Image 1 (tube, rainbow, N blue to C red):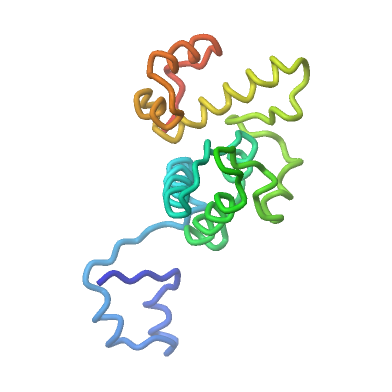
Image 2: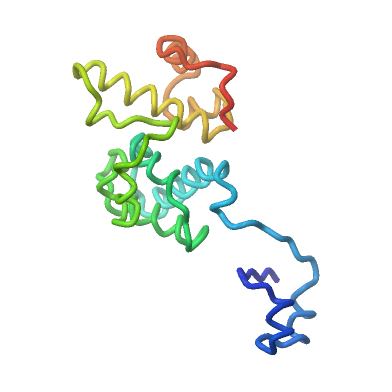
Length: 186
């Protein structure tokens, strides 16, 4: 049996709010796990996992997260922890068009409020990128590739698979956009 809580059960026992005998029944092999807001590096892989999971569950092809949507998800602090992240990604998959990208418009209001803050290092907002359409498309594609590499800890073969392109094509795009191979993706 596996049980999880966000409470300090030892303190709850001392305050008389949790039964001591139940604690000892459950506490066979405790594994302390910090909240998601303290494990920010786990976010890209978790987001990709939940996106894949709910795409299969709802039998819906998605092309993944648009860079700005991913950037906003990476900013959020997740007071509801992993369950909140899972629910948010499920909502995004439900709202996403078949064979489309998950866009910022699919995110809940509490995350959209983060939109005006200073951009993170990953991703870009291709819809508001300055310059020509070509520059906007390149900014979007570059950010999307960076996000895939980050989610796959820099593994190009896995990232190419997630992007639905050949590894050779990914390498060509990495070179074209000047994405550093020594960049810390994990």
